[in-house]
Length: 202
Image (cartoon, rainbow, N blue to C red; front, side, top):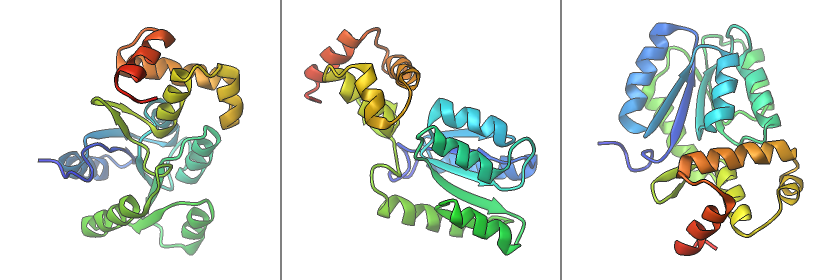
C-alpha cells in the first residue's frame, strides 16, 4: 500500500547510471503514485515540461544537460517542482552551486534511503502549495499551475489576461489548457466551466 503522504504526488528520477536508476525507481514505486524516469538532463527537462512532477530527484553531472542547468531551465518554464540533488561528488563547488540555485535538498551517493525519505518528509510537511504541486480534481491530477489555469478558465478569464497574470506567453497558457482538457477528458472551455460549477469549484 502506498504511503498516504505520497500517493497523490509525482516524482521524476533523472539519472544516467542504469543500476542506480533501477534501484531508486523500485523503491519510489512503492511510495509514490506516479514515477517518471529520464536518463539525462535533456530528457529530464522534456518530462518536467510534460508532466510537471512534484518532486525531482536528479544527479548533477549528466550527459547533454547537467542537473543545475536543467533546474534553471525548468524555472524559466514557471515550473515549481521540488529539486533534490544526488551526486557522487563531495566537492563543495557542486553542492554550493545547487544551494545557490535554490535546490531544496541534496544527498551524496550512494543514496541512503532513510535520509532521502527524511528529506522528502521535511519538504512535504513544510512546503506551501507552490512547492508541492499536485491537486486532485475528482481523481484527475493537475499540477498547481494547471489547477490555477483551470480555475481561471472556469471563471471566464481571457487567455491573454491569464498569461499576463503568470508572466508567461499566451502560447504557454494554450499548452496548459490542452493538458487540462486531456487530463480531465474534457473538450472545451464550456465543459471546463460546467465541470467547475457542477463540483462547486468556483
